[in-house]
Each structure stands twice: as C-alpha cells, then as structure tokens.
Image (cartoon, rainbow, N blue to C red; front, side, top):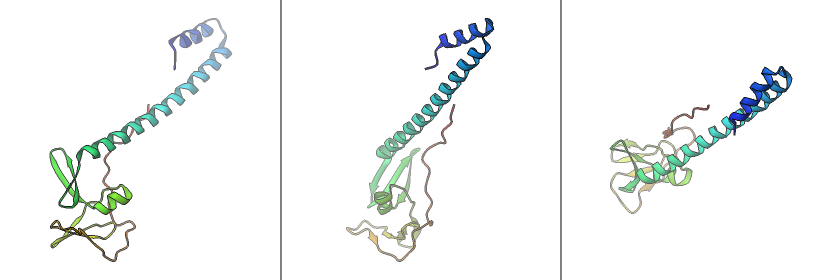
Length: 141
C-alpha cells in the first residue's frame, strides 16, 4: 500500500536537503506503485473473465438442439454445440438450405430438432470460423 506518511517523509527529506535518501525512497515508492498497477490489471482481467462466465451461464440457452445467446433482449445464434462443448468457444452456424453448418468444425446441424442433431462432414476446421469477443479491453492504471 502507498501510505500518505511515506510521501510526507519524502517531502521532509527534500526540505532538509537529504536528496539522495529522498530519491531512494521515491524509487521504492515507484516500484511499489508499478507492482500495484500490475496486480490491479491482473485482478481486473480475472474479474472480467468471471463476469464473462457468469454472463454465459445466465444467457446461454439450448433450444432446438443448439446453443443460443440472449443479449440486449435479442436471441443470437445458433452456435455450434459441438464446438462449444469441446473448445468452449462460440461459433455461429451458417445457414444452408435446410441445415446449419459450423464454419469451424464443418458439422451440419439439422434445423429441425432430432435425436441426432449433428451430421459428419469432411472439412478442415483450422481457421475457418470467427470467434465472437464477449469482453471489453482492459485499461491499466
């Protein structure tokens, strides 16, 4: 913690002409301030991650065998259930005639709810999808 008394002590050292001692104390204070800013940045990032998890837990719903996200009073989606369950990432399904296709894993998902929602398709999954960001950038002090 950066204490008010430390700043008063540094001021007193300057006024008495003990510049080297005051400079050393200022350097220590600066190092502590940098460490605190780093810790605050890390804690803000953790809080944002927990808020994202809480938001998904409250707003991610399954309907018609697919994941849908409620945000701002609008239902977004559908998202690939397989990708979310295996990677934890939401990939919006693309509409193709009577099926939805995942741009990441290539699975075809029926538009009508059935016991088997996903049909295998030959496709290379790497780099085809788009990850939707659900957090704002973190500002450091």
